[in-house]
Figure 1 (cartoon, one colour):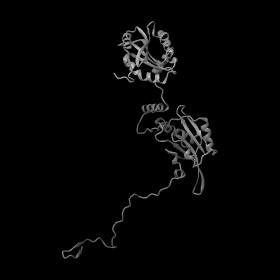
Figure 2 (cartoon, rainbow, N blue to C red):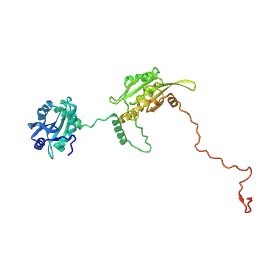
Figure 3 (cartoon, one colour):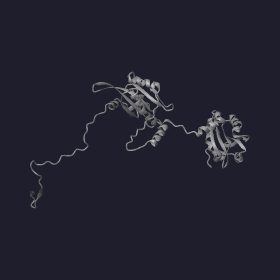
Figure 4 (spheres, helix red, strand yellow):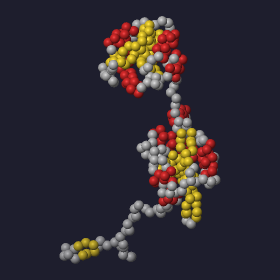
Length: 351
């Protein structure tokens, strides 16, 4: 048997484990001492498991430091009584104890017998191991795992695919992005941008709160724009690009989606990309923003004056065929083609 920390159960603890499988023992405390798993407090079964839980287990953990506890439930399987395994690590435990007990947990379960363990709890606060706390754990464990916004969107897509009737006349809608709500200061900044009271707005996604937040409205010209782009985080930028084109002074609104390469998580890439479409539709249709160009960059250094100008006013290329047929052979006016052959005497003869 392999042991993650090299710590094994003492002989006395192994004997205690073998004697407790008949259900007469209600709770066993296990400690790590001198690099051995040893038994601590041990209590016999007195009443129902709920009553013994409050009277025996909780007081044992309340007065102890880091430890394990094995609590015998009243349910049974083919091997005998089923047990609850508790890893108790109070918040005031030392880092060494936290690491040691976390690394030895699997070893203890193997020593006791994983098939006997029905459930397990890892707790740092006493309310997590009270009877009401354990019941909350059972309810949460039975409930489906919560879905992120992206997972909910994917789930809805699968439902739509199943419930959609497809035939030759069916027009399938494209997948809509995830719509995070924008905070009030974001809407105020974009309205000011639409009135040209400000020339730059930087936004971010708060992935924890699932909202769009304002980062900056700092005055910015073309030369300062690259320095506004973070090198480690994705951002959305609205920039009022002031320039001259064909002798006219123009102000063109450019949307810039900056996504650094390897420093961003897959979650950030997915959320920024999915939220971008719905947000831009809202900005254009409800806030009245006239976005001249939408660009995506990896590095702020790309945002030069030449780059912005070419994006807003792309060069027009004249069409030239890739292959031009060569002209045919010239012919003598009024005459047909002549076949010339050489006579035996070396002179040319025509036919």
